[in-house]
Image (cartoon, rainbow, N blue to C red; front, top):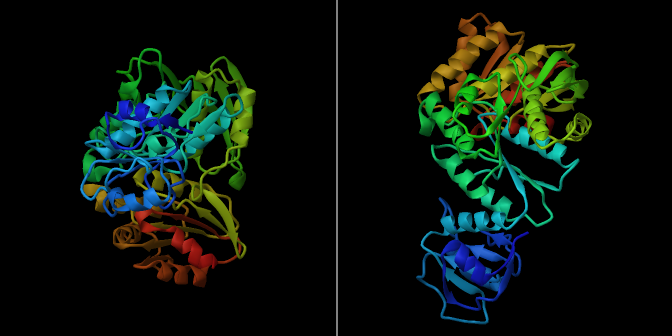
Length: 461
């Protein structure tokens, strides 16, 4: 955890001491007065709903060691007995620059992970493997943006050797900025597909934005490259870093072969690991998780970790909630993949359900895919066509956009009696309750804003 004197903080963020003791020490950084602890540094960040400057009094009462502000209005008179007050022009930039400064004081190697899908799972798998050999920290939850990443870096200590940092984005330049802050030595781009189209508009712009991670690597760094993703291969061509490739279908340094599905137990597979071959069991649903595991293996290989330790790390991986999470409900299987969705991840989920071994019927329960810009209607229509072609018995949609998928599925030949369009979660739950039987399998998926986990909560309540 960060521990620093105020005078060093002033240098790191180009701040001006308004009052207080420059020799005072703070331990930890907070931007939320509700969770602020005594002797932490409180940085007043402005947001859409809250402004940290409105909670300065609370930070003082909680005995913050120092407070960083950009707005001097309403400041209390100088009081050397209270928190040291630091002024900067931009508190968000101060947060980021302080995180970069702290990271540079630590003997840690940073792994940056981005991609349209699989970032969080690849992060969890990678960290679980590196923990077998190195003192590792990883991104907490999904704190992967311009605020979350700095907060994660503040957790670094001199004992840490590896930091596995997830890097999210919704616009051009954001990955570049995150890389400037974290300065990764290893960069992983899991895949590139339609997502964040509201801001980026085209797939080419998404590709360029993800490529900012590879661009940040120097000649001593390593780029981990999905050899089966043409868009990733293209951006890898311009990096100065060494390449380590992984894949299933194309030639790669780390390659999965002879993949044998084992239902809810995951997959058995053979791995060609550069100059070694071994068999292993991957205890996770979804072919996409094979790619995530291969990305983690390739990253671990670049760190010199041997196959035996890699297998132990993967076996011990605990995936984050709502990622192909399997539960039971009255004799039926529920696959909860409700965390988020875009066209590619929806297709992966559909494939997983269609190939899942179950005694009964298969229910695909979907919410809207959001942030697709001008492609939103077409993406849902296309998904409906694909649903009709798969071994799916029932389709349940929630939301206006998902209704396009239902209509398209009917047009493509799916039995209309086996399709329900709902405007609310409770309506979808009612339909499911009427039709579900022991032995059936339900897969639930939708974008974060669709809150499809509510279907599962209400169904199992």
